[in-house]
Length: 324
Image (cartoon, rainbow, N blue to C red; front, side, top):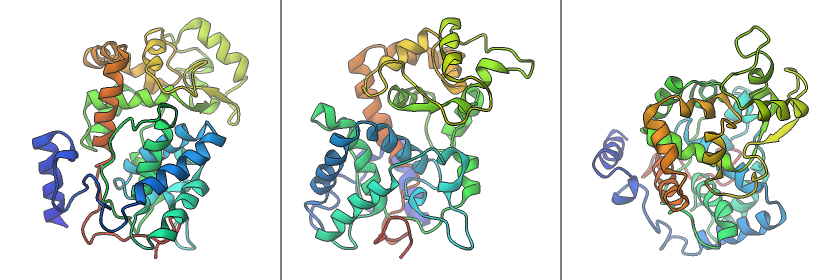
């Protein structure tokens, strides 16, 4: 285990991304011999569901992100709670996640062809990529495979490790650095907010009580704030949802950075990206669409390698919601 961890760190330090490393780690076409149709089965199943529900790409992308930030990309997020353990799913940041049943169904499709071979961690990583890529009809980033599934899932670890929408820049940098990700990755991966929604209670403090004095966040665009107040009527509203990227929440592109520059980032953690000169420099670079897609692909591959279990570590779950 220590040897594997050392190799993983060496890969990151020397090559920047894990894709360059082979051996016992994750790699391209890991299932080429053991289950050659695995990636195609996952792709087809994912696309079938996304064709019916265009909100799934945002759900799967967020799910993958939340999984990787707790214990690494080991599908610990997919485990259900047991009589003696409360799992990550029950943590406040994860209560608004959905689509677990679809990941379970996609896993079941793979199990029919290759029982006990493909991990839930890889199913989730591939489904996230394939769902976002669906409208483009080409993979937007490469997913290295060979992850194994963890056996532990703790609510407390989710609360500690998942970045908060209320975070300031210093907290965000510290959180990402603990996962081997830098300021550049922070800004690039925040671009995932170009799709999906946010619940009022994750940002309404910016509208009604930013410093505890019944005030509004001065860094939030005033016109946008007025609009948000028509959606979120009070601090107590925890059910109403709002697009993270206004009028573009189903389209994966770099529009997020344009609204960010207009001070229309929905969360405090979005606005925080404008408070640091290095982060702001990256925001400006990502206004170029081709640069965004290239950098997003690189940072997603890097994120997908956080704390992976390989070799004999962990297990290959038969069902994603329970250990073997």
